Image (cartoon, rainbow, N blue to C red; front, top):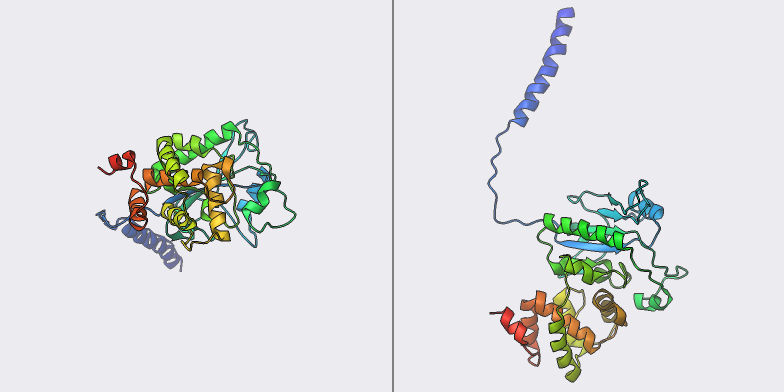
Length: 310
């Protein structure tokens, strides 16, 4: 009995070690296929619309309507006794966080599956007494403060690192939550400095020379609703070219203006909005702009457009 017990106590652990060793030493040869890409194709930027403690609670604790994000960026002094903004990683970039909702961008739906989300602690001061029928209905009752400069610096550096790790995120795929869910989201709001981030290599921004060209064209030839719908869809927004100024179109226009023309956000079409949109298409989405020209022969070709296509 003593001998048998000693034998079993020795043989069983050794057998387990040998099995594990055999698995660990299984020869696997890396032979990469060209037919692959990264999971992450989009970077979505949000604000929490809550203070830090409430933001952290909502993004990390179980809830009947759970939400999360890959990163939470605090304001200075809100976490760890540090006098600088902190970056909290809540979900690893290799995993799916629940931040994008029923979203659409550049033909992709449900962007939770292939995006990284950054939540920024920020309070919009919008009233919460009733749900608005649309973001532009709520706008007159909001008072958006400026983002702290040190917080924006941290967000910029965080985003730069994400873009280095995920090269499939091109400038037009760095988007606002409002861009991908314009019917009921406004974040990160009209005070978020998209132009400043674009200058640092994060996201898209138009060239002023292109805007001047397109503004002159649209001042003389005002764009139709159908043309704007086609152009917004060509850039990435989830809108169909039905030709009527319906609620969806106004939501999308309001989101676009909040991102690129925050001083003109109205949800309506004007020459400045059309100029900014077509300048972005010329810079980042040339094939889509050429397809628009095929369907709309009156659209001109600027000298810069011609130079880009050489």
